[in-house]
Image 1 (cartoon, one colour):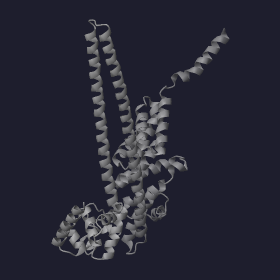
Image 2: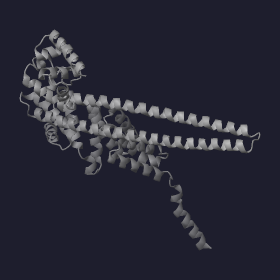
Image 3: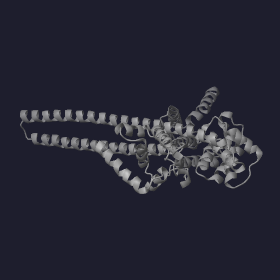
Image 4: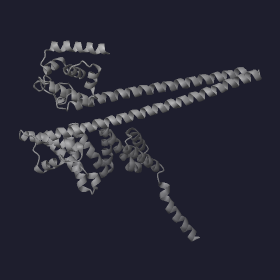
Length: 437
């Protein structure tokens, strides 16, 4: 008898942890792992959906400590990768507040580092400096693996130097040497930031600036990579939306076919009942069939309305991609040799009149500008010359500047012409293009 009691007690003690186990944990883990897999595969939209699903499925503190902050951190990483910095900052600050509340040093460290770069990019140097210091303090007190702390010293050197430059302070020689080492970092973003700061510091010291050319070359390479990345992601999202639209249309066709088939069967059944029985229930059956027909038609109209809404969403998305593409192409042009001197409102270099006066008076400069337009705007200048073969090089350059919405007075300065001459040539070119079309 005593042996049986002891056996039952042992079984109860063994099964007690299993009874307390949260049944939702395997589901949250599965959803989170799927989100990580989708992010690694490049399917960022579905990855965000699964991260949000994992975060909202955490109903206990154990799940939150294990998966909620990881899901929010992963979502913030994706927003930062898609250049939605405000959304990324919001999610990462939520992770940081959660980590401070529950004393999760690893989560706080992982949130501090991307927030440091986000604040640095937004020009909030004080916050970036504070976050970098806190990340450094956490790392110094923990034995983190190299895979987690890789790049931290480079980020700290960049942030400390940027903060010192902003507050007009001198930086120590050790920080300056670390910044110079970061200029050779394999990470493109950190390398560009370091080269830009070194160029600023070198410009303060001497007229010759050995870092400026390297900084410009790395910037061009970086923006080319970003442009290709955004283009590929936009194309992938566009294909995904088109596939979803086609699948929805296919389901609608199947529903329509089934509904019409059922409707035909119901009509045939009503005719058979009316012709066979000829009784008082015939009218009620016909009314039932008509009611089902109306419900089917309303359902199909609702489905049609949903399809129209989806089409409008796709059109709005395509317009958004087109605007983003034009903006990226223009910024890329303004980093070119001739394009950086063009007096456009959105040119980040803000050229002065002395920079673009007589810029296009030379035929060689005009040819160089047309090559830059072809490179950045998908053979725009070459396409114009193929459309209108009698266009001269100067007239093609006029058309490209008109396409960029450059003011007539600025174009006159660039070509050493009067403003009235430019206006009359613009009218002649518009008439020539309209006649060709």
